[in-house]
Image 1 (cartoon, rainbow, N blue to C red):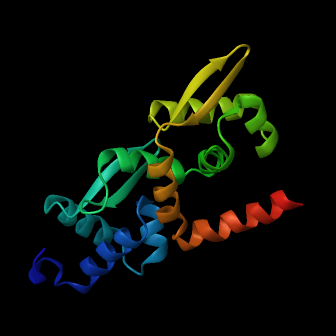
Image 2 (image 1 turned 135 degrees about the vertical axis):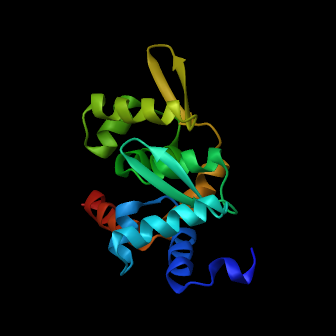
Image 3 (image 1 turned 30 degrees about the vertical axis):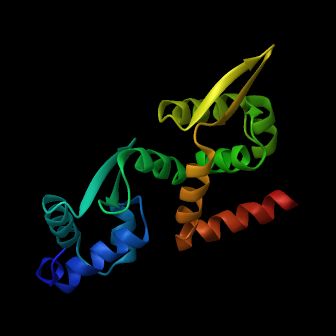
Length: 173
């Protein structure tokens, strides 16, 4: 990238925020930066047109990534890590997997149907696989080393780090 591409302070700030917060969505950028909505939209479009930033659709959110840092497979993992219960499921599978829906439900304090829904979304993104073991269906991470690495990248985001610490504290009680 040349010096001239990010000559505007606002464009540079938006780009740097996307790099520092992979998978941030538009509202997150507006909340974090002191720019008007139109300014953020304009610069994001410019950054996309110049292949510096890429959009990734994640349900009702459009998330943004630096094109230099992540490929589409990584973006799918990062999108999942941005969702609270998907992130917590991934964390349990990374530490203690493979686990069943019932085991994850108990650990998360959520109904089996809620956990099952999140697991199906994770399976759709090729993040988890399931294997029948008799009557038990166990889920495990497809690529645990890659997921662990991206989980550490994700946890650098301040807001999510704070939220995760609160949940960890809550879970310890």
